[in-house]
Image 1 (cartoon, rainbow, N blue to C red):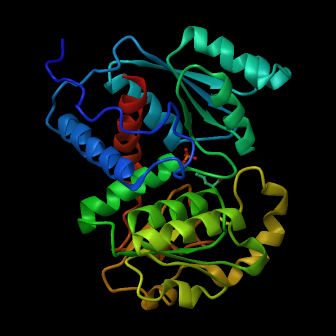
Image 2 (image 1 turned 180 degrees about the horizontal axis):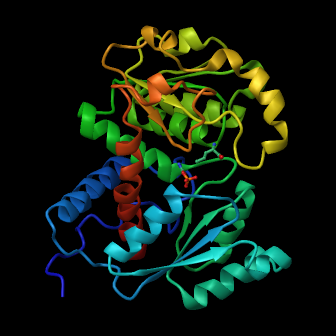
Amino acid sequence: MSSITVPAQAKILNGKDFLTMKESTPAAIADLLKLAQTIKGKLQAGEEYTPLKGKTLGMIFEKSSTRTRVSFEVGMMQLGGHALFLSGNDLQIGRGESISDTAKVLSEYIDGIMIRTFEHEKIMELAENASIPVINGLTDLAHPCQVLADFLTVIEIKGQLKGLKMSYIGDGNNVANSLMVGCAKMGMDFSIGCPEDYKPDEKVVNYAQKVAESTGSNIVVTTSAQDAIHNADIVYSDVWTSMGQEIENGVRLEAFKDYQINNELVKQAKSDYLFMHCLPAHRGEEVTGEVIDGPNSVVFHQAGNRLHAQKAVLVDLMS
Ligand code: CP
Ligand code: NVA
């Protein structure tokens, strides 16, 4: 049996679920990141840490995944628990069983649900009807687990979040929304350079700007990639066409052609900038190979941290 006890600060997150960055306070995000560092340290030291012994996480995927699926499954295994992969197509949900019935039934068998789906309303309905924690593994609106891993990576390399500037160049999508809110909460400046028609959700921008007033950060939405990237500590990229938008790919390739992160554009960033990308990447589209495979890129370190950041969420919500 493990001699390591669950950290005293668990229960960090407010509420039973982890759906967006909005519900978490800056202090909760900071504590979750500390917990992630502690749990990562235990793994690296070879210490057994199994607070989720006997617990099962159901992982519902209605979209593809490499990182989220593997990191959650391995995370549960390392924490002493078990993960079930549930394909949206194979569940009765794919044949019209209601979200609320699915939530109630799954609550009878398992201890937590991680879901990757389309409409954010769906995860909210699932969470409202489940008596067990629900974790967002990506919706069209948000990707909070990604942002926790990103922040863990920045802390490990730069030693801080507050006062840094993150510049995101590209589509105002789920990843951009969660980064923007996360940065506002942690006192980081965030600027997004994107075409007029692909700005992030206005409600999310307004919320982030309001939060930024209290944390002293600055949230900027601009159509100029050059302005957005100026003096950046972190340059961030995501695909131009997200899952579910494949039909728009041709239009998007044209709309985003001036928003590629390449060696010319990154001259505007600080010389020790970090290049980050949630992955999967399309080299030659949103970023060139010379940047993503270059010396400033930390994308694989970042991907690795999905495991450690999510283990903190799992321990906090499920132990
Ligand atoms: N970044 C991310 O969520 O990757 P996957 O789509 O592979 O899970
Ligand atoms: N914005 C991307 C992120 C993939 C991890 C998508 O939703 O497809």
